[in-house]
Length: 170
Image (cartoon, rainbow, N blue to C red; front, top):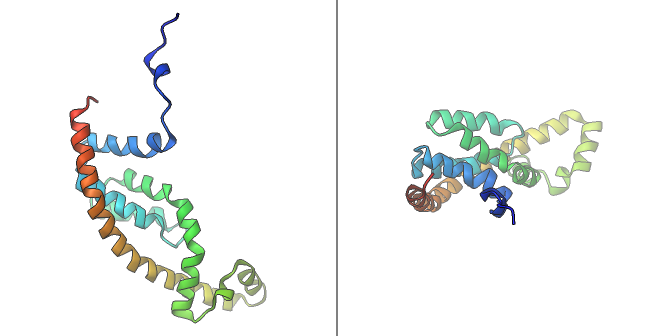
C-alpha cells in the first residue's frame, strides 16, 4: 500500500473555512486583538450592506484607516456581504422613498422605474434621489444599532478563538 501524504488524507475544507475563518484566525495570529477583530467584523457587516452601489469599498477603506483597523479584513467582510447588499437594496430604497418622498411601493418597482425613466427622467431622478437619501438614513440608524450588537456578541467569540489559537501550533 503506497504512503499517502498528510494533505491527501485530510478531509477537504469548506469554502467558508478557507475564505473567511482561516483569514480571520490568521489575523488573530498576527497580533490583531480580539476587540479590534470584533469591531472590524461588526463594521464590515454594516458597511457591506450600504444601500449605495459602489460606496462600500471607499467607505470601508475610510473607516478602516480612520479607526486604525485592518483594511484587508474589513474589505473581506464587506465584499462577502455583496449578495445581501443586493437583496436589501430595493427594499431599503422603497422604505427610503416612503420615508422622504411619499412614494408608494408601486412607484419603486423595476418596471415602474424603467417607465418613469423613459417618460419623465427628471421625476425618476427626483424619486431615486429621495429614495437613496431615505435608504441611507435608515441604514445609518439600523447600522449604529447593528454595530453595537455585533461588537458585543463577537468580542467574547474572538477572545475564545484567540485563546484557542494561542495554544495550538501555527
